[in-house]
Length: 76
Image (tube, rainbow, N blue to C red; front, top):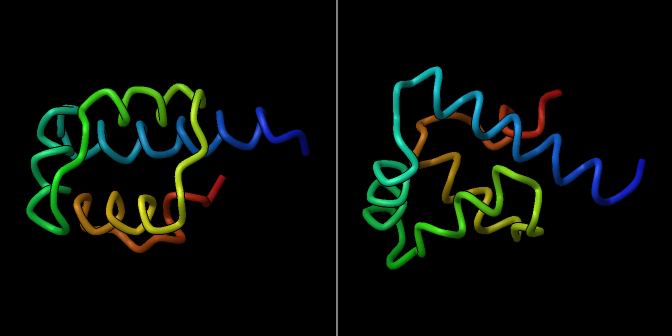
């Protein structure tokens, strides 16, 4: 699988989980900052659109902020 395709799949999955919990991107960032410090709102948009490659730590922070297991973000 190409990197760009994988990034888009991960981003799409994060967006699906976030929206299923009725959480906005801004609310996600606020939740992430509560977990582990500052996070730029524009990063969530770039991750969800597949335009950036999030680190495993960032994925972990997103999972914690969404209150899901990390594996749920890569289950597609």
